[in-house]
Amino acid sequence: MSSTVELASSFIEGAPPGELADVVADVQSLTSDGDDIIPSLLPAFKRYNETQLTTVKLPGSSQEVIVSAFNELEDNRYFDPESQTSFEVDHSTQTASAAQSYPLESTNADLIKSLLKSFGAHAREHYPNCSYGVYPIENDSAVAILLVANRYSPNNFWNGRFRAIYQLPVSSSSSTLTGNIHVDVHYYEDGNVALNTTKPIQVSIPSLSAESIVSRIAAAERDYQEALSRAFVQTSEGVFKGLRRQLPITRQKVEWEKVGGYRLGQDISGGKGR
Amino acid sequence: MADAQFDSALDLLRRLNPRDTKKNLQAITSIVPELTEDLLASVDQPLEIRRCPQSNRDYLLCDYNRDGDSYRSPWSNEFDPPLEDGTVPSERVRKLELAANESFDVYRELYYEGGCVTPGSQSSGEWDSIHVFEATDRARMSHYKLTSTVILHLANKTEALGDMDLSGNMTRQVEVDLPVESDASHVANVGRLVEDMELKMRNLLQEVYFGKAKDVVGELRSIGPLSDANRDREIQREMITSMQK
Figure 1 (spheres, helix red, strand yellow):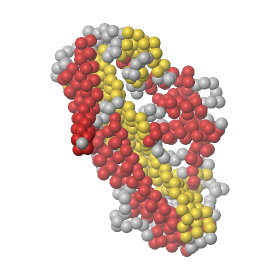
Figure 2 (tube, chains in turn orange, brown):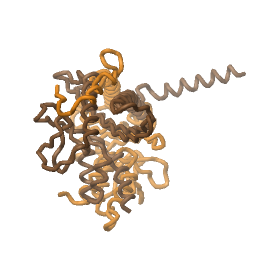
Figure 3 (tube, one colour):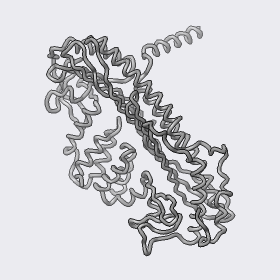
Figure 4 (cartoon, helix red, strand yellow):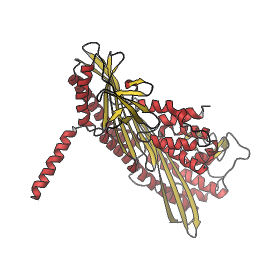
């Protein structure tokens, strides 16, 4: 059987968008008979933050920057190329501290800077509340382009998150961008309903200019959002309709007095099956 | 403390992915074994189907027809695996059970017939309805309390879409007083209550699964450029201001 720490870790990593603190409170309550479990859950918090592209406020700033496996420097220290800052993250509280100047040093620094500009403009045009980042990865042979958009409305019992995670090799003049888009929506008024999507992205990039890369990304994201919108309609009209009719084929409700109640008058032992 | 832990367990199950309810329920009861009985009685899970060997008809496995590791078929009144001293309903309740099962079998045919998935397409769906009744007899009337849960799992996969999973459960309650002439009235009253409730819940699920979820996606990402939307709002504001002058 799995240990309490393993089980509690799976709860942390399964927290829906914007509800990590609620899940933590529940875990603390369920484990209140033993020692404080939070320190043993730090690896789970770190995995959650890096996978979910958690954003933290830079100290002394209102800017929210991304925490991910792509911009980690060393244990719990991350960097943000746009503000040229590095910072330490407390994974259990999702806060940043000890900010330091961190000039971007990369053979692809020019591409990264122009990507930040173009991708930032694209992000602001389509995501009302988002954070993004472009990072050198794999010994400067590739760049990672990340975006996370969150909307939380706990008073109305819904929260949502959109994540885009792309990688682009930059060693040759043409390349292929690969990655995934994830959309997670949670609705929990008198129930628990979750939308979880994963869309693999593969786009060929004929020339490694920031404008060209971002316009291909923008097209792929638009195509995906349109496919998702169509899927809502198709699922509603298709599978959902097939599962349960709105009315019987006769267009009339059931006549309950006629459909079996008469059997109550019969002797059970003599009552025959179908 | 136990009450607080029970509430935390329910809160956690309301937050974690509804597709994993069974797994998460096991995890919680493994951490706090004392909660097992109460949680199993309060958390609805997708129902398993078993074929009754006597009648060759299908029935559902749930907490209400379970005794130990055996389940009682509502068609034959027999336990499977067989039990010497399994708890069976009184003769009156058994008559009601038979009548209700026959009636709801017709209901199932009428509303759920054809509930299948097109072969070859990679979309799937599963609908579980669980309606629990309490009836209190009064003179010529009965007070009914109905708690209804629908568990609905939908999945969709295509090249353009990737993987899409829409899963969850919703619960609603209703209380009502209805006239009763004989036990047959109970079946008809309960039938009508379930029929009305399921229609309401079907519409609610449609609204949440396909309306609300889609709206939230629209809140996260705008298909059209936000600057256009802002400019339109600005123009509209100017028009209103100029008309007021």
